[in-house]
Image (tube, one colour):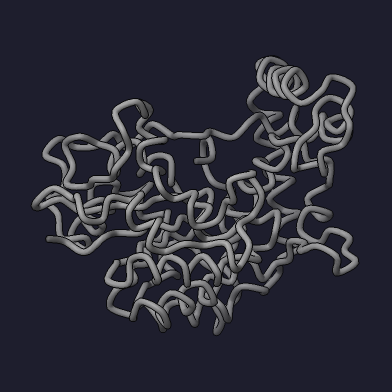
Length: 337
């Protein structure tokens, strides 16, 4: 019986694609205990993952609020069909940018308490492209800050706030190595998924000890495509008035949460149809340049340490590394994953 597989994300690294086309694919060797009433593939793939970070009331799970035995039973650890691999997948398991990954270590410990023999998959992404994609998601959720304010929000130490260290991937990798062992952590670059989806999937399946799906998986469709750059940035200062969300601290909007969300997303989508593609690409390049100016050389040392921990060749994928001028990566082409 293959060891359980835990997929921790990160956010914006093709997690929805993996969940829909691999982990919940009936033709794959992966399994979880989602009941038949859960019909959406993405929801099936995420089944059971919420126990590791979410309390019944929807709040973040407290340090002393976790029950490993109950979680094992809910995951169906003793009911895995012969020859299949139990999978737990959710990008939230790697923490969340809005809370600066404050509960990462707790989640890792809970996962180890529940599935001590598991293998862990972690997918990373070149930080500048990752930050731009994460910022667009923040705007989609109603965030009002500029890109600089998103990366360095005001803080008074009363609640966790995002800082650039959130994307120091080596720190998260080392956390899992210490609990699960170096041989039980597979780190892959998101850029590999874009360039060679079949090879990417084969690496994960080989690591998990299951055969890859017999039918090739789609390699061009992108789940959770980002919104239009022009409309998202143009609407950001109005967002708190339109909708109430975590992105704007649940500001008391004029339209309420549900109506406001529908109106806000509708404006982003349909106004975006009026924006010429060239103008949208120009806005994208400008945002990317502002990310580069803010980040500078911040991730070079972390990326070098990640290479040492994993054996990855990150330079070939455009990651910034020391010993030479940081490569000026192009903004991610097409729509963000």
